[in-house]
Image 1 (cartoon, rainbow, N blue to C red):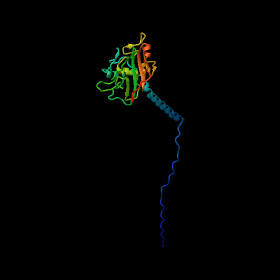
Image 2 (cartoon, rainbow, N blue to C red; image 1 turned 90 degrees about the horizontal axis):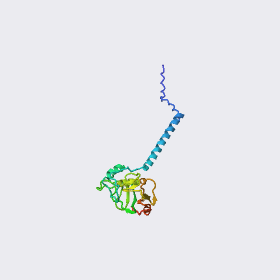
Image 3 (cartoon, one colour; image 1 turned 60 degrees about the horizontal axis):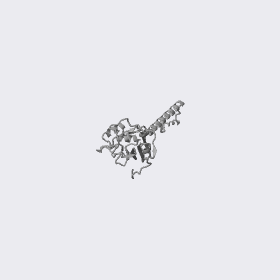
Image 4 (spheres, rainbow, N blue to C red; image 1 turned 135 degrees about the horizontal axis):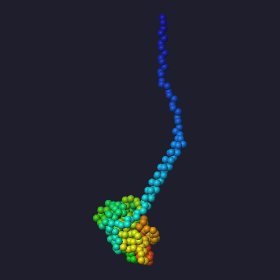
Length: 234
């Protein structure tokens, strides 16, 4: 009698484990690639430095007033607020006509004006549309001589721009109809110190006492003020 042997059960077959790929470090750059990366980084840094320099210096750019302005007054004082062609002057000066007074930059100065030894009033309402539709960033509210710089942007404003908004000539040694010569001088002082160079480029800064004086040197020097007592909150 033949005997049939039972087959032994087959061992289960498992997929072979693959050997993990070798761990490799970062790919090493060739010397040429390293030089290119370093050069690109230098270029980026130079561009960033130029952008910063331009942004810092933009507020210091020259703000020269044009040689002529619409409705400019070149006659004797006193001078009114002269708002008839205010918007046209703002366009010529490159200043905005604001719907409301600006709040981003809000500073004040005081202006004293002397002609031949006589104090002349700074007009109220300079830079303000009489109908109330718009304001210049540079304006006055009353007869105190306090100048309001109220802008929607932080930028440089000058004494020349103030007179430009007012529409009173202020250049080449003249203020209105008064020009230096024949023993008369036109001088500008800030906090008691005489301004050298072009007074139209004087930058307006907080709480300056500015004196614009025309006359003989003796008349001019007798009206130099060091400071002004600003009201609280100004």
